[in-house]
Image 1 (tube, rainbow, N blue to C red):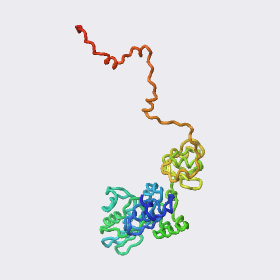
Image 2 (cartoon, rainbow, N blue to C red; image 1 turned 60 degrees about the vertical axis):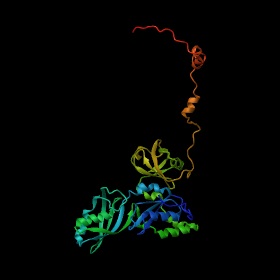
Image 3 (tube, rainbow, N blue to C red; image 1 turned 90 degrees about the vertical axis):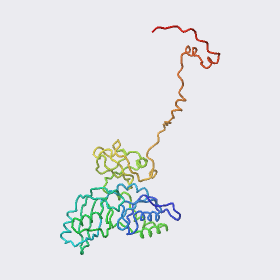
Image 4 (cartoon, one colour; image 1 turned 135 degrees about the vertical axis):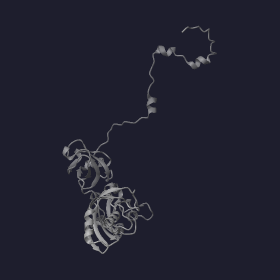
Length: 356
C-alpha cells in the first residue's frame, strides 16, 4: 500500500473502496503512479500487477480497503501487445510457426532485472497472434498467465529462430476483466479530482469502479440487510440470511452482496449450494475479506444479557476458602515457632542399640 493522505495540502475527496484503471505512461514506476493517484484523491492506495518503468498500459489502482483484493487481482490473466526486434532476418512463415510452437505451457526463468527470485517456473501462453512484420520488427499480441515475462518470451523465440531477439516495446492491454476501454490517464484523474473539490464529483464517480467489478466470475450470494452488520463484524453467515445465490461448491470463494448490489465481503463456502436452500438454518459462508464498514447497516442481532467475567488465577485462589479440619486435629497442632522460642532444645537421651 502506498499514498500519503496525511501530507500537508492533501484534500481527502475519496473515502470508499474502489478500483480505478490507469493508463500508465512510460517512464515512472508503478509505485510512483499509484502514489500520485493517492495524493490526488487523498486516500490510501495500492496497485496490482507491477509494470516496468518502460512499459505502458493497464495498471489497476486499488483505493481504500479495496487493497484487500490484491491477492485476487494479481492472479488475473494478462494481455500484451509487444514489439520484438529480431537480430537477423527471419522469413514470415518461420515467425508464424514460432507463434504456434510457443503457445501452451512453457518453462520460464525471470530476467536478471526483476523483482522476484530467478527460479524456474511454468507459465501458459493461451494465445500468441502475429499482427504485423516489418523487416526485423515483429508486432504480436499475447494472452498469458499472470507472472509471464514477455522479455523472456522474446529472448526464447529469438533463440528458437536461430537469430536472437529482444523486446523493443511492450504495452499491457488487459488485466483480468479490465481492458483499455476502461483506462484513464493521470491527467483525467487530476481534472476529475479538481472538479470534485469544487463540489462536482460526477466525473470522479464515473471513473472509479466498485470492488465487485474485480470478481465478475465469482458466484454471487445476496443476503438480507439484517445479516450484513454481523457479517461485517466477522460472524459466519447462516442460511437464514441468504436471499438468493448462484451455484458453488464447498470451499469455493464467493462474493457476498447486499440487496442493493453492494459488495459486502468475499467468503469461503462451508457447504455446497446444493446442500441447503435460502432460509435454512446452519452456517454456510465464512467471511474472509470484508469491504463494507461495520455500522453501514442497522444491527440485526442482539447482545446477550449474560456476563461471563474472566477472572485471573490469583483472584480465584484468593476467593477460594481453605478446607476446614476437624476440631480435634486443630487442637493437637503445634506451633513450631512457639515451641523453639520457649527454651533450649532438651538434650537427647541415651541411644538404644538396634540390630538389623
